[in-house]
Image (cartoon, rainbow, N blue to C red; front, side, top):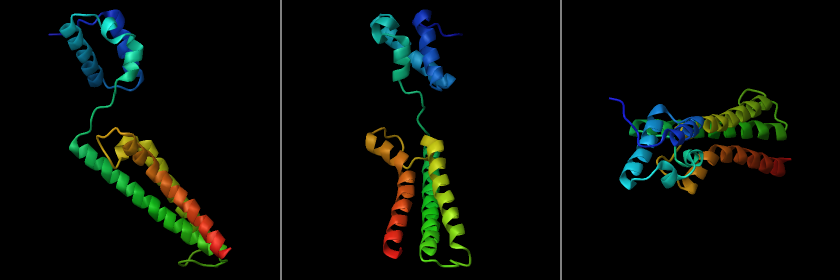
Length: 175
């Protein structure tokens, strides 16, 4: 049997369209309209009376579904691997940079410029990868506080910034 919603169709369509525009899955849309419907039944009121403008309300509610324990574990693992890759990239970049500043012809058997470029590519690629993966590469899961979000979004870029600071320190001490 198909569920008949108490939510009036002229409110329902723009609400669902606002959710879909933000990338909500069909299951998330069903759950959201179900919550609105339950509130309308419970309060014996229309969706417009309870929630106001459907598009504005559709932009307010979260559209992502919580991760399972397995997904959260994979997300933390990805974040850890990307952080390690960023640190390795930082090490290679600083190794190469130090060789370049001190006019070394070889560092670990290769031209220092190769280590420098390779390190920068790895560090920046790790940061970009973390940014692209978004919540699928987060250290902290299930918390929406500002500190948690800031840590998850900025950590890979902090590694890139530390690489630049390290380059400055090497230049000031050896150059």
